[in-house]
Image 1 (tube, rainbow, N blue to C red):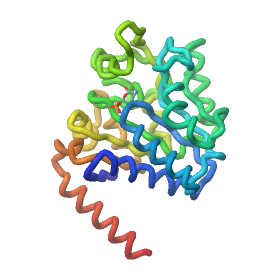
Image 2 (image 1 turned 90 degrees about the vertical axis):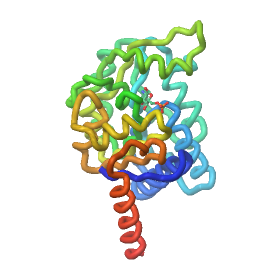
Image 3 (image 1 turned 180 degrees about the vertical axis):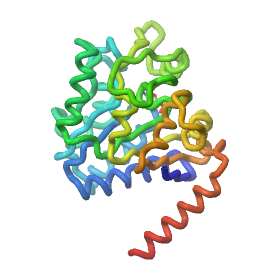
Image 4 (image 1 turned 45 degrees about the horizontal axis):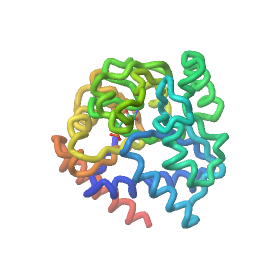
Length: 261
Ligand code: GLP
């Protein structure tokens, strides 16, 4: 796991976007794994900008989102399908027919199985973008999720429901169930970028990077993945014990890259 600490949330987005740019340039038919939540919104803004400036095209890309609420129609403003259209797909040249979000409406059990198959048929996810919940969840894999789980239905914790309440108006139905890629599904991605910003994520970041491998912090499963980059701002890094070491690795990696130029 590579831990990269940068100065601001904007730098998290810019660096995240540069990883995407590099990969999509090398492989135009990249299969992206995408996340919702506030954290990746700035990254999506950067990607939109890169495409507008013709540095990047998503024409041959496809994408799989991590999760979706059960009981929200894709047209619902709080559905993750709607979120993705609004924050990314409506502004880039990706073919929307090649963008997949789990179907939380018709038969979620069936669609979970189908989703796994669709990912395999696509050739597997090349680059998975992740945020992290305050309790260490990735996707909607709440604490106690099996570390070998596949796409399935999960019950959201009271904390996660409260954290996401800000997206719903007072009288609006807020689901307590979701369909989410499993942890094993996520770990099969060839590369993973986890982004976290702000002090509210500091404990989750500490647990995922330095804590024990444990279902109590589902994101700690990323310790078992051999190509994960964790990009965080100083606030999210504030509880890390070994941040000096991560900074040193970052400097040396940059120096090595410069020497090879
Ligand atoms: C939701 C999503 C996660 C996301 C998390 C954190 O629960 N299912 O994929 O990482 O929220 O969201 P935010 O970035 O808004 O803190």
